[in-house]
Length: 50
Image 1 (cartoon, rainbow, N blue to C red):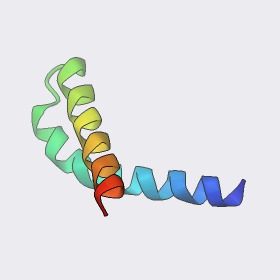
Image 2 (image 1 turned 90 degrees about the horizontal axis):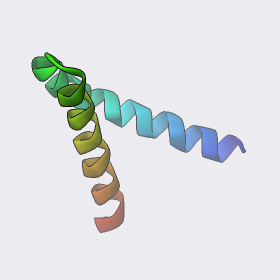
Image 3 (image 1 turned 180 degrees about the vertical axis):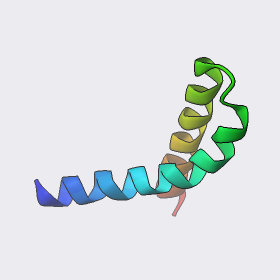
């Protein structure tokens, strides 16, 4: 349980790094969620590739 929580906290920490980019385009909810989704995809691809 603790390991899963740690992984989730690390994931959201990495997601916050991508949030800086998303804040430029947050004029609509859909655009903001799209950039968050792209950040999540970037993180997951990085985990799969490495």
